[in-house]
Every structure is written in structure tokens, then in C-alpha cells.
Length: 347
Image (cartoon, rainbow, N blue to C red; front, side, top):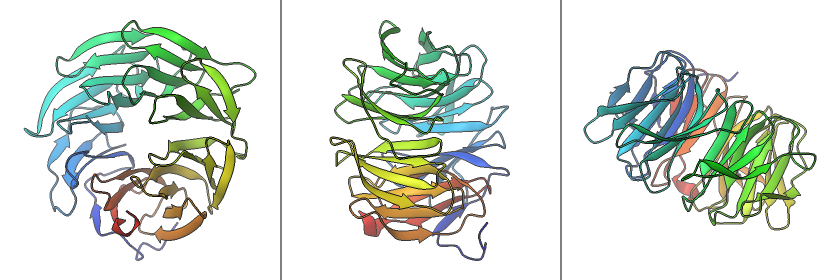
């Protein structure tokens, strides 16, 4: 898709032998990155280092998710093989393996302050474990199809999940009971693909294959708005940590920045092909997008202007992650490479 001689990256990690789908940056070590891919492997590596720190072995299918605990001490790698391996980042050893029903996992998230992990499964359930003890704490049953997205609220008190059954559920993690089920004519009509939660734990923004974006109040489970503007499947959604703005990326080749309070479009950022991923650059006004056209773009959310285009990949950009110091963005691609770009000028 792109001239492979054109490469704006400051570092490339190329130990994977197939497509890479997942990437995460340590919250405590700005140089430490994890990646996972179709080669059934994950890696822990350092930006600028010639050798990887640790190979995340033991999976028998695609490693589709990697995530660090909030203290940076643990790293989870999840796979379609139905297992989540938990690694100690200090000792570089496998701490334990978490399993559910055997069905593949779609995503995983850590508790914002502790060593609890939740993961959504193809078996229609949400699973929760204590990673320190490799123990299942709860199974959350209620969805009637794959649990495709979810997260803890930032205060850690509730869990929100979306499913291919076109519903959103808000759960009590202690009882594994649904507080609210959101579905129906004023909500999505097809499977949810992504969701993001405001920092005050009050509001969810969800996206769907039906091209729609909806806003839900967590305390009541009520749909309080729709962000209408896309004409393709919503692939990613992210709420700014500093502004009351939300970004949504779609297969319609648009990244839209919304004013969440007014539920109106601030600006539209046009791409050459579908948008696959996004990441706000820390507390700044800048947001990054990954695209089917292999490019990573940086946008000014005040004006909608594209202020930087990073080339280097030869195929679809699958995921993005920003380093803890805000100086680097890491992108992973179907081409099997992980590239690191300098974004220090956008802090």
C-alpha cells in the first residue's frame, strides 16, 4: 500500500512472523512495550533495544490482546485459544494462566487500581479473575452472543460490556448481576464494536456495526443521546482525558471529534480509507488515528487539521499505544511490524 522505502519511524520491532493485532505500553516504564499477533506469540520489548526482553510463549492461537496492570508489575496476554497468561514484568516469568470455558477471548481489561482482570468471551460470558491467585472470582451471564467490548468504570466500582447481541450491560462486579441492560429501538440495532467511559464514571459512549454511536448514563442505564454522522461501521471510540470530547473512527473513512456535552460535531477528519484505531495523545488536544491505508495520522482536535502523517507500514494499521512519557506512539500492522514514531512535539 505504501512505498516501503518511506519510513518515518525511529525504531522498528520485527520479531513477529505474521500479522500483529495488539499493542500496549507500560504505564510505568516509557520504553517497555508488549505486542501480540497471528503467529500465536507475544513479545515484551524495549524501544531502541535490538533484542526482545521476553517472548510470551504458551499460546496455541492468535494473541489478540496484551495489557499491563495499572502499576506496571503484571502483563496479560490473551488469545483466541481461551487462555490468558499473566507475566511478572520484573522477574520476566509466567505468573499464572487464567482460563474460562475454553472459548476464545475477544478483549481483556485490568482493574484501574488492582490486579483483577475481566475478559469478554465468545461463550457470551464475561469472566473475572484475581490475577495474583489465578482464581476465577465471577462469571457474568446475560448476553446472548459474543461479548465484544467492555471495561471497568474508572472508579473501579462497575463493569460495562457490549455484545454482538446489540446490547450494553452495566454490572456489579461483586454480585455479577446486571444493574442495567440497554437495548431496543433507541439503541444499536447490530452488534457493539467498541465503548469508552468518561473519567468521572458517569457516561458511556458506544459504537456499533450499524454505523451508530450512542451515549448512555451509567447510573440510570438510559440512552441520553446519539452522535449521528457516520455511514460505516464504528471501529473505535475514545474519550479525551482533558476535554469533554469524544473521537470516533469508522469504515466510512472518517474520524469525527464530538463535543460530548452538546452532542455535536466539532470537526471531521477525512482519511483515504477506513479508520481502524485511535489514541488521544495524553492530556493534549491531539489525537492519533490508524488507517487501512497503512498510515498513522496526528490530528488537532480544535481545528480538525492533520498536523502529521507517519509512513512506514506496508499494510493495515491494527492498533495504537502511547508511551507513558507521551514521547512515542507505537503502531502495529498486518505487515508484521511494530513501529515507534516520535510524538514529543505534540505533548
